[in-house]
Image (cartoon, rainbow, N blue to C red):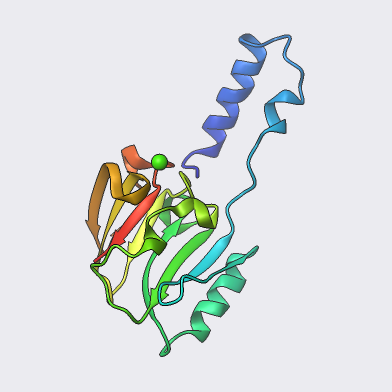
Length: 159
Ligand SMILES: [Ca+2]
């Protein structure tokens, strides 16, 4: 979601002060989307469970240890901060599961800023559009900053 919040805020203030001096104050914040929630997605069943707190997500993920493998995670902020979306399952990697095809079903379209693969699925491909279309990037292990695809990821593949 963010890399340098202070710069964005300063820029917004500057724009409001110099470019849109007569705009109503409420207009700038009225349409702000809800922040992403931390979700666990069971690839075996397609079931997604979301939590308001990252700590609750972590506790639920820990309870799955030894039951379902952790396959990979996206994070709403750089350096694995913010909300976290985690895929887990027992079906294996390298498949284009429908759970990966459209992140908007979890409220995660154009949200991710960093990502992490796992020992179970050691690499990840990230795509600008749904159903694995558009610009993409591939990485192994960990990617603390998605660069040109920051806030653009709409579908993933885990491998
Ligand atoms: Ca996108």
